[in-house]
Image (cartoon, rainbow, N blue to C red; front, side, top):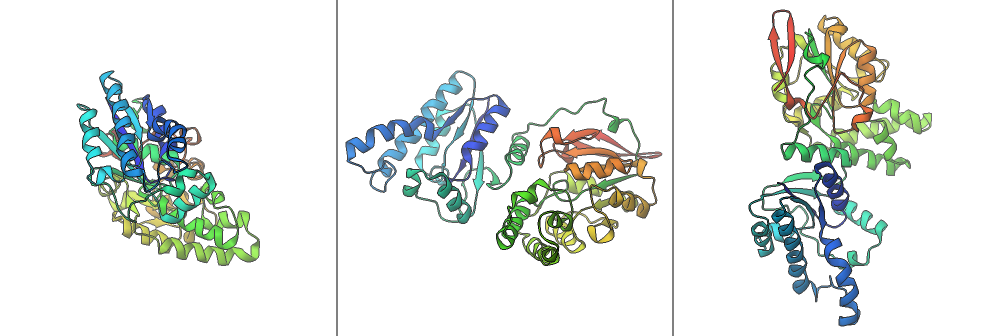
Amino acid sequence: MKIVIVAGAAGTGKSTLGLAMARELGLPMLDLDSITNPVLDALIVPIFGGDHWNSDALRPALRPARYASLAAAARDQVRAGVGAVLVAPFTREMAGASEWASLVAAVHPARPEVVWLAAPTELLTARRTVRGEIRDAHIADPPVGSAPAVPHLRLDADLATGEQIAATLGYLGRHRALPADSPVFSRTFDAVLFDLDGTLIDSTPSVLRSWDTLGREFGFDADLAGSGHGQPAAQLIASFLPDELVATALARIIELESNDLHDVTAFHGSADFLTALPHSAKAIVTSGTRVLAAARIEAAGIPRPHTVVTFDDVTRGKPDPEPFLLAARLLGVDPTKCLVFEDAPAGLTAARAAGCTTVAVAGTHPDVALEADLVVDGLHQLAIETVADGYRIVRS
């Protein structure tokens, strides 16, 4: 029985993620706003003559009552043996306020698992402006940079919902079952080729921030960049900016991404997978530039293979097979004896065209967009075995 709490300031997308998680886990969703706001909206204004229930004057009394209502509803779900996904800010409560202890006691013996959505002030301001809720004018945000005092999974609010769900399921210990009859498990490989971003490392927050900045500076919708994930930046920029701006925009996005590395991290299992292979049997094949790839590999702290193929090394990037064919040639192996790990449709298309066996890493794109021999939640689900004629992939 699970009690999953989706927390964060107003505008982080708690309700969107909470609803998606409730569907994924088959649990009811209890949203603090849905439980309490209709009653407060109907009663407080008539009683207090127009003062909003989330105003500085009324919040101290009403906030504990709101959280008590959420705890009571959650207690009922636990008593029914169901569990629930709870959606609420919890900014004060998880920093030590008494309402948190009351909630934990209410859902005992279930143990709350906390997912915390973090967002910069400018993103929260933009989202609140768009939705135009009256209560947003009375929000008391926690100090910038504050985080829950209780154990939690931190997620960036600007990640795609699919990526947030994948990360949350991993945090909850929920992983997809891998089919034993996948051809990946029956083949022997001479080398393993890895995409970098979204496969070995999580650079998505940096990518989103950088392309959002580029979009503002050059006057295009940053969502266009997201739709082309996995393709070289030069190709992507050329598809929606005039020729005379492409070189300038490319130099700018390289600058932005290379200087935005503070939260670039390795995915669970990446370092172990790379370490298990000798340099003669592994390569990173990325659509990024040589400078950007080096910066992100170092920032994530993963072992750097001797062979790294970047966009600077090819004339045609993914979805063309040239990057994977070049990596196989540099390693001195037949591309049909290579296994490729990729997270993006463009990369998977390139790998298939090169004749490689493919494993898709879910999260960046929905499963329906991932045409591969095997789909996994992450490299942590697999391990490498050395055999007489090469390397085999097994379930970990």
